[in-house]
Image 1 (cartoon, rainbow, N blue to C red):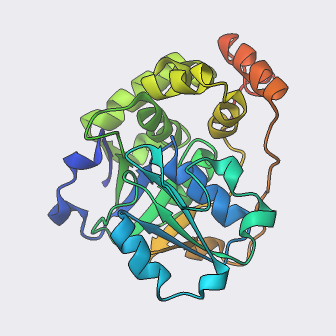
Image 2: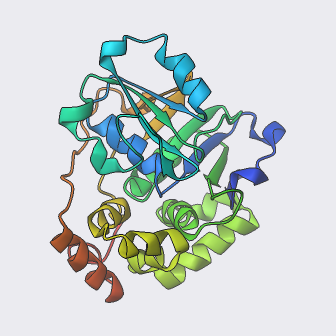
Image 3: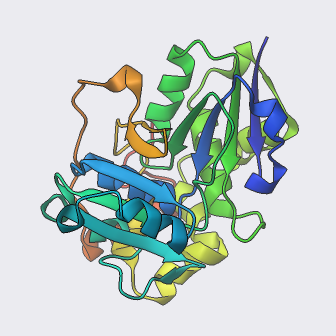
Length: 274
């Protein structure tokens, strides 16, 4: 029987057990959401790195006139970089045909799996379809967490992927079983759950409702990014396909989405569907 496991933080990874598996890294706030957006918006090459030193090493090998540097370090914007960690900082006019070196202390550290995919709420249904259509016998949904701690948003992201799958053919670990149980309570109220966590509250306290709604829009993207050779690209099975490029919402739509979430509805007032 195929195996599907949810790991609550990346610290739970046992490298030897990842051999031959597909790993889906989930860092909802914000690395995997932003990397998905950069890829959607037409970047030529995307290099996720874990340190400033690695970023500089990668940058030196590229055409300096065509490189953008972005990301975060310990949840802070990096001095001297072109952009920070937020997805709205990478519109098509900024990243199309550019090389992007993206620093993140969460979400994209080296994982010794056969395949590494990037998941978030925006592409959760697409990731679920991809996993079901693949022939992989072993899947790890890896919640990035924060400084080694569990985070609600990453667990919600992994749980949303899982809830869009037919799990009857999979053997689940305890984390996956808990994720399904979590979705029994919060399916259709995902934005409400997203706000309850420490990171989710930060977006409301700092008047970034538009970003919050963008991050929390489930199924907005059909794209499944894959990390191959240290670069983010469209997964091999999607090469040549057309993906959606949804517009970033404004603050009014964000407020409407949260009101809908409290009523158990999706961003546009309807029940969320995989």
